[in-house]
Image (cartoon, rainbow, N blue to C red; front, side):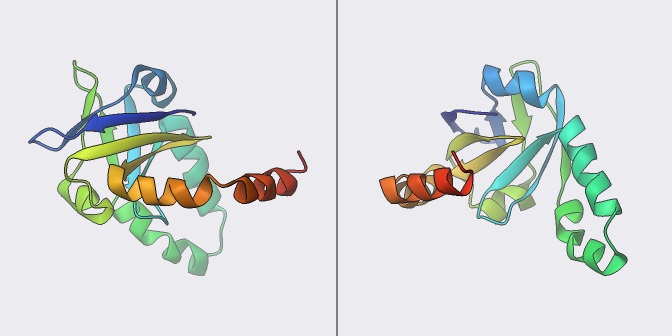
Length: 138
């Protein structure tokens, strides 16, 4: 998934999903916590792959994944292409109004726009891009 999109949460906590990402996420997808202060959204296939990977871990490591599953929400798009984000997920990520939806390879991320701006400024430096390219041997 790729791209960056600006949207607003409505008063009920619904977020419009951009058409490009709707195709990749599907009608039903999973939203959960991220290690950053944002939410991660996975298509059903990506979520199953993630779940399979967790299942293959030793039990002690699986327990560490508990919050990701406890807070996960199976979300379905409504007729207007919006998804209702549960309050506890919105609170975790600090989502109140302005949301930036970011494509991030095999998943999408939902960021508070002000928080995303800070992260984006740190990541979008020539030095950081060069470091990433070098790590990928690009």
